[in-house]
Image (cartoon, rainbow, N blue to C red; front, side):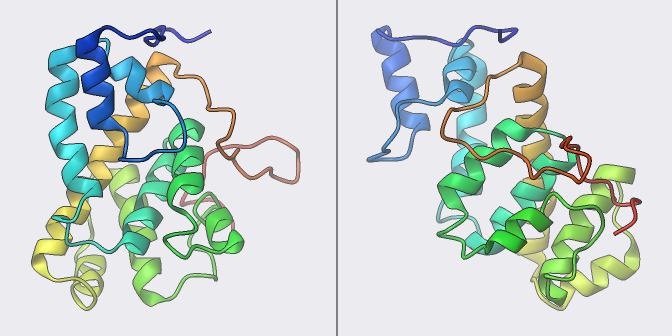
Length: 199
């Protein structure tokens, strides 16, 4: 059972309007549990919505593929199967992520499937997750591929999906039936990726 029971239909008019703002236009699924949980706190949801729309919208200077690599990696490092699985299904194909690349977002270390640009993104997520800092050498590598505005957005994107992961994990948001599961490890138990693990 979730720790915070999400809203269920029929929704009150104000909740209906809030959920319509969260869901993408023409969505093939009803409002997801994450959004129905956020909607239980109207003022908080309104504040979160603006940043969420920016990060996933056209104003964001980060390309779809790069954005999704970062989001999936953050969710994997935070052990947030809920949001990882939703993003893999909702955006993985559009972002051009192969099955090997999707699995690599959850794999320990920087997998060999990534090119230099993508590997830098994975390392960015890992360094921020592990230390809260970005090393000078990595920052310079990122600068070869991303301009200053994009690098600032990448920092916020990493932090924003920590917020989402903490919210989903902390509130016990239950997995969507159609969402992907974390890749299984050899011992049969899925676990979050760790930068220091052996590859």
